[in-house]
Image 1 (cartoon, rainbow over the protein chains, first blue to last red):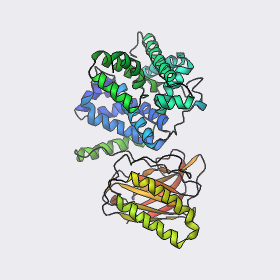
Image 2 (image 1 turned 90 degrees about the horizontal axis):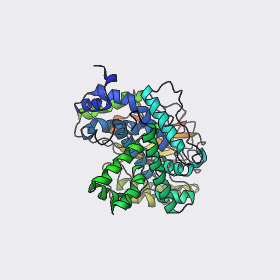
Image 3 (image 1 turned 60 degrees about the horizontal axis):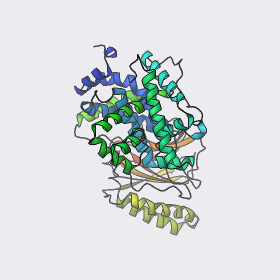
Image 4 (image 1 turned 30 degrees about the vertical axis):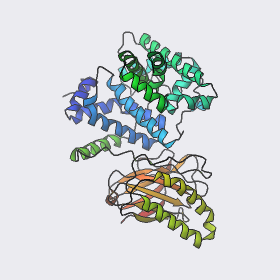
Length: 195
Length: 266
């Protein structure tokens, strides 16, 4: 069977039936995104690999709980990766990720995907390009708080303390920024399978 | 919590920005409100796309092999829970300004109260014998007070103490590893190991004839002290020895730097 032509949902269905090749194909498709996310949050290659491994073990063990009507497979996998990474980061009470205000969050999104990445699949290239464009369209101060929460694992209170902002301002910026991101993605993805 | 309040918080919840209390209240509301539940799923989907904006990087090629070896192992022992992450606890800084976690998050069943007692006795002996180690003693005593909370409630079973010696790269370094051979976790205490520069880290390796498994990374403070929790992927009796090397910051998937400490586990 040529697994590369199967959809993510088909692969997860086969994974439920203990098909390791299907899991292998899912791994090939998403391990870079899963690992990159974990590494971005944790800032440690060894731990990021451990988390990536745990994500795909979870996929193997819990694929029967995946509901394609609620989320895409990629969202599900990355959500697991995000939760595990943030959980680990908070447990250790560390702030060691490479991401910080000094990296330029206030002005632009660092390490943004580049269009000439030869290793990405076409569908992935389109997705990355759209997400990158969408994030760039959000006002700087809204993008800043969203990325601090997502990649640094910071809560409203953490961000308010770090940026010396009133708590209400942080909440408002996140809310406005996320609604704007949602609108932009919906608009940008018209005609694509992004959202 | 009503729908209006929930809708205000859902975007933040989808990216993990709520504290535990707020998140709990929102989860309770979402579970009972189809409209807010639908909105939440929309934002989960949005948040799930954020990582795709990153310039991604590939993990080591061996990761896939390790993943399927682990899955094979799980298939052989289907009742076994997924092992918790094998992550080192970063030692507290010299002034202990950073609070120590109240407990080890991955269930530190192998090293229990016995480890604390042994460590305390050992520290007391050092204090008596070596006055020049007084500052080290103070560090560990402070740490023990905090670590006692970490270890509270844990039970000790057949804890062994293995001594680590510095190689000629770090002749002053000494260490002790508290472990139970049939379990997977251990506690590593290091003294006299000079701190590495910012772009380096120390990494513990669990060694067999054919493999080197990372036991986690750690750094020492300016006094050369570190205390690190170690978790192995299988019972420690399967490993012959341990080693500590210097590695690039973030750690390596295979030892690449100079070995600075070592110990035989058998």
